[in-house]
Amino acid sequence: MKRVVVVSAGLSVPSSTRLLADTLAAAVTGAAAARGTEVEVQHVELRPLAHALADHLLTGFPSDELADALDAVRRADALVAVTPVFAASYSGLFKTFVDVLPRDVLDGTPVLVAATAGSPRHSLVLDHALRPLFSHLHAVVVPTGVFAATEDFGDVQAGALDKRVARAAGELAQLLGGQDRGPDGPVDAVDRGEPAGSEADALSVPAPFEQLLREASGDTVR
Image (cartoon, rainbow, N blue to C red; front, side):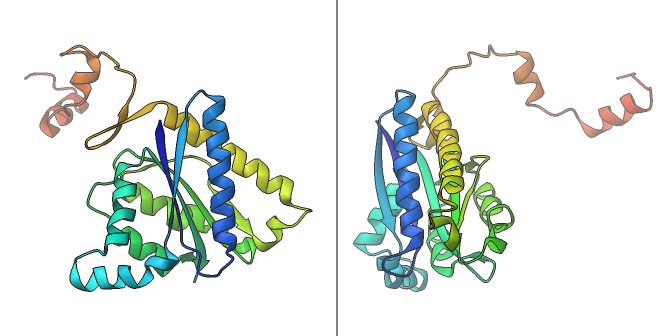
């Protein structure tokens, strides 16, 4: 059983951000099932945690509800992160939750990033804000992000949004099927079996800079 945590930072009720989060959760569950992977989805809605997040920033101590949400992310095999766009970036509520995550908690975790806004002009938030943020946290961000403008939820454009959702969900399911969660985060499920002293092991140790300079100048004397 794989654990997928869906974090959504919508502020209104009902919320288009939560609607997109639910759509992505269903798509990931279906894509994983098609690959023979059973998925358990847990939603973390940030709106009810707004006061707890502010208190945590000031005191350093999370409430019980916030501690449960942080623990859910820590134990997740994969993450779906959905935020509304504020001032051409992720919302402050979303960033505050990321700010209080424990250090290295997302190392190697597959993440699907998504965002909602009133206009398609904000779609670059995926590559200019969300992707760099999760790359900084050492997460593995799937190639396809999902952006949904207000018009994407209408009948005319629904098919285009469905295609983006399906593609991103398939990419996350593919990563999810190749990961197991260890005590320090996701690890490869397949043992590559590289023997000690192999080429891969040798390449992991960089050559001294002085040696590279000698080789570049044609001086091969050690």
